[in-house]
Figure (cartoon, rainbow, N blue to C red):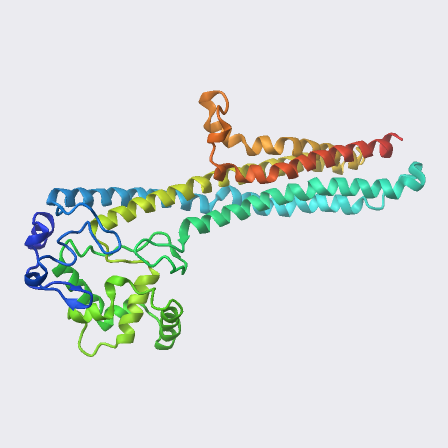
Length: 404
């Protein structure tokens, strides 16, 4: 163990693994002819990502990158714990069934039970006024249902975007199979080529393959062979090409090539690449940026969804006892309730932003607010303005009904 740590932590890349080298372009590399290691002599440079810095990475730089990766793993774990907390969404799980079981059902019954109520003093105008009244009341009622449900839909969509992606650094840009955003991590070949070869040898044992892809032979053929075929082989990591593995002599004798490719496809589906250490650092930084971008929108969406459920449920709670009182005019109560709901729904939706800017006594520059954080508010504003107009018209129509 001490020998391995010494090789990884203190030796320069040129001092490691001089007995055998990883392949280049399907052929075994020879230091005597190439003058350098294909993977580790200049870990900053690859065919895909060339570097202008030709100096080899020093042991101190390697240790700094390892320490950075440890810190970023903690940060990524924290981000995922935050996401899990909001996915569980205790507040929404309680409000959602209550919202649809109690208030909404009761309000629908109110609308249905009052269809036959007569207003003889209106004469022949009664059917027209009642029809208009129902139209102008049903719009804000439907909107009060749509906004919380649409908010929930966007929240669930954000959860999917947070956890899944179709792009991964190191894979072909046109490979768009959905994968987990938190990609797999492979041992960096420029850390120790000898250890990387031993890892390959262990992974391609039949027992290891059976552990990694525990499917029946038929399902393996259907799932992995079909995936390889449908992606034209792009799902196979470039660092695990069959010719290269054979050149490294890491495959057991008599190994079925199809089984090897299926395991490689599993690595591809898990987006596990054998990246150099510097590439792993770069990918981790990108992963942090991606996770934070999606998580901030997810948290903001969760808070707004929760506020929408609470506000709509509160207005419905307050209206129901008044609607059940036979002494009070039903349509007037509904019209007043939806006027209040529609007037305040946008300000309540904007409340989280006001909380963020509380120390500035307002939002000093609206143009600096990220569109992704206010997209729900911008989408719903025209509908809410329409709800204000409709509920006010319904309030006006109540005058001839009850005061005529």
